[in-house]
Image (cartoon, rainbow, N blue to C red; front, side, top):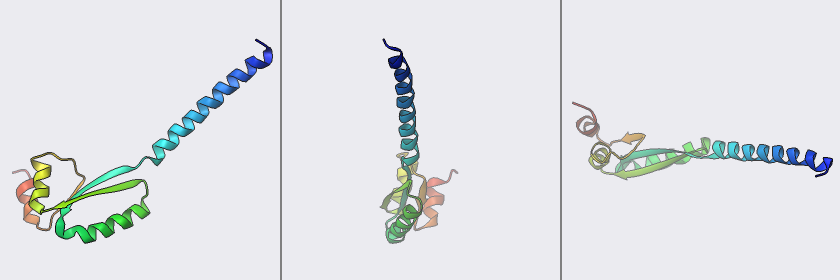
Length: 102
């Protein structure tokens, strides 16, 4: 192996390593974080607007919404143990009755 080849090889390896680290770091920064929201069907219109406005301001966050009856949404959390970050009920008694420990 020539002297010139020995110098090129470490430079190539260090450049490849640096490029890999940059791509990996950019991938971490651009990965979207999900926020899961269960809400009453009657709140669909306002939550759709909130989602749109929020995602414009926070492009790294993806709002995932699921709507249905307030009791059904609460039971999905309490009985089926569905992961959620936010629960919005149209009737506060549903939260007291279904989601608050006795």
